[in-house]
Image (tube, rainbow, N blue to C red; front, side, top):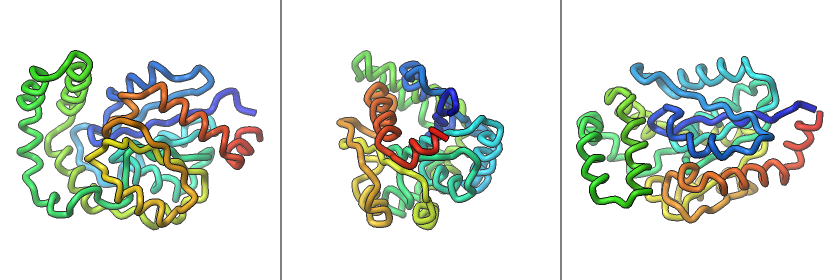
Length: 239
């Protein structure tokens, strides 16, 4: 039996590991937590990002589970299609298998919008309470590490993605974490996932989109429950 299960964190749109700090800081000692970051100055498709993740996990000691947050939810499923050694489960967090909002969004001037990120977040800081201000500042800091062209390209990837077949092909345990106040990824995306995987468990958090950051302790409790309740996952761990 391995000493520790690795929990591999795949980030949201920012593609950096910084926003995982609250989750990493509150991680139970029985897990080895690994956060993967994506290139900040290079446009890469989902397929190219998949290869980056596969390369990183190939260097890890099995077993491991993937936590695919938002943008990375489809990516976690695409990685599972390649059946990397040691992958035994996936946690899908506030995510989707097709575009979460109206397709017209792909035609909006996202590059220009991301250029406004810094001044817009400064305005929000002035009208937020201390806890919200700290988180808003963290989001702003992480987004500013990434090229506006890269962020805009990732938005286009979201509007074009279709991970339905990857979900259908997934033969390892899955769980979905949903923020009940999430307006970024609406309920219809969860319904679409359940239509293809009726047995997937959905864990609801009374949060907005960034549930791992706002409720890290509850997230770890739900991850641990997922591991304990999944017979096939426990079987893999005990080998």
